[in-house]
Amino acid sequence: TWVLDTIGLYGSELFDAAIISPDDIWVVGEIYVWELDTVTGITEEEKYNSAHWDGVAWSLHDVPDYGRLWGVFAFDHNNVWFVTGCSVVHYNGQAFEELWFCDYDQFGFNQTATVWGTSSTNMYFAGHRGNIVHYDGSTFTHINTGIDTDFRDITGTPDGEHVFIVGSPWYRFGEDVVLHSNGDPLVWTQLEYPLHPSDNNDWPDVYSADVLEDTLYVPTEAGLWKYNFNTGVSEFDARAKQKNTIYRFTGAITSNDIFLGGANMDYSHFNGVSHLYINEIEPLHGNVVMKGGDYNGELAIMVGYYNGWTHALVARGYRN
Image 1 (cartoon, rainbow, N blue to C red):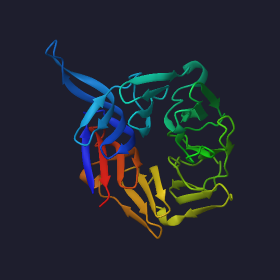
Image 2: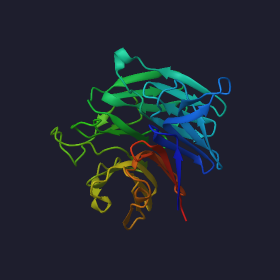
Image 3: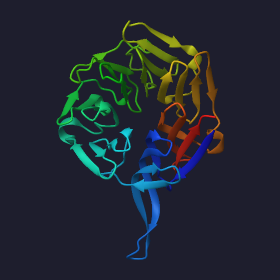
Image 4: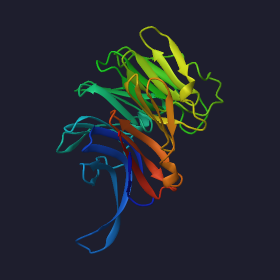
């Protein structure tokens, strides 16, 4: 059952979400609202980059360095991580602290567009043009892979022994990339991704991934790619294939509970036997675009915007 919340005015959009509990959810992006200045008495447009759901209402926040937020990852209420593209911000439940800021001249734009980790002493950040940043609790280390692609998602095993980064070039032809690390943040291997050769004629479609036990799940336009990183065996599940659908986030809870969030807030759920594809949100709001989300088995969050940036949109899906 879906509950739809509109946030902000024209130009507002959301890119990612993190579920801590049904009453503790963060969404991030760029949010514009009209606010009354109590000093001047003038109503002015204000910009925020995140919103928090407490189970009753959304509250707006401005996370330093006060730019657009691309990603969010949460362990619990007192341990939330945000990325702005060029900075890393940590929230301890009471205050935001900027821990790292990039060097534009040396590393380029949007180095930290996505975030994932196993603990506060093992955090991974990745972004455009092949950039990876790792934090060990005291030091941020920048890794330039030399791969000319834009990383979209990071995932891995709970112990951090296997970490994966997936991506595709941003709005241009190029190679879909899947990287694998055996727990060493400085060493990455590009997996043989069997769907598209590096022929420079493919529109990007690798946006998300998730790990469940010994298997990496990567949704694509051709179906759901499953890669067992212990055996090296890979296969495509074509039952998840949907025409003109790009899955922007993946949530794998069990082998019988896999949620794929589509670019138009359509989605697919795999119950171990079959994939059920549903497009029920887009008809309610014209021109819906979904940028990211989160899933914990009982709750799905999809975020983006609709009707040409008229409003940011949050879809909260509760399992019946």
